[in-house]
Length: 150
Image (cartoon, rainbow, N blue to C red; front, side):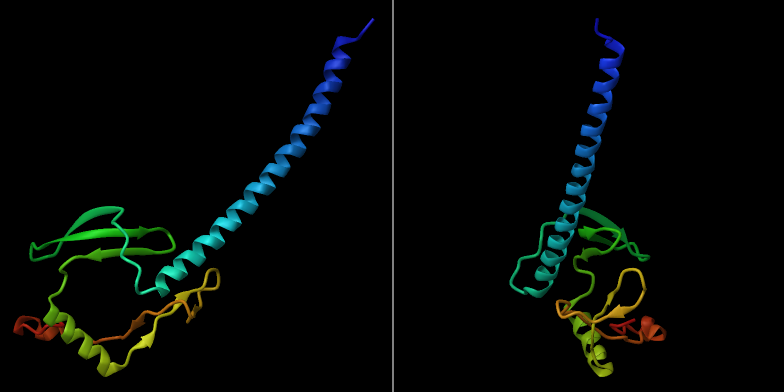
């Protein structure tokens, strides 16, 4: 005479242990795969920042932005994440305006761009980051005179 309840209870207990162990192992594997993907993603992003020959990616999305004078600009969204965003405004400034701002920047000296370190809020120069920046004072008082930087 077999006690069906007892057999089922023992089977359930056995399967719970097997399933729990398997789920734990799967969660460990998922965490490992996530870490590998994040490392690969960072390496790939850093490589793309260091290679001048790579073509620009296609826009993920196109938006439009209206300036206060009514001019509408096309904005290509390349990357938009919590950690970083890259948007490209087509024909935002003319060649002459660009050259003028570059000359102003050269006068105050370019510096290597920095990255914000996660967690502690400190900024640091990284070798993969090739961008330069300059703090340029915009002469807003000359805006009505047609100054290219204003």
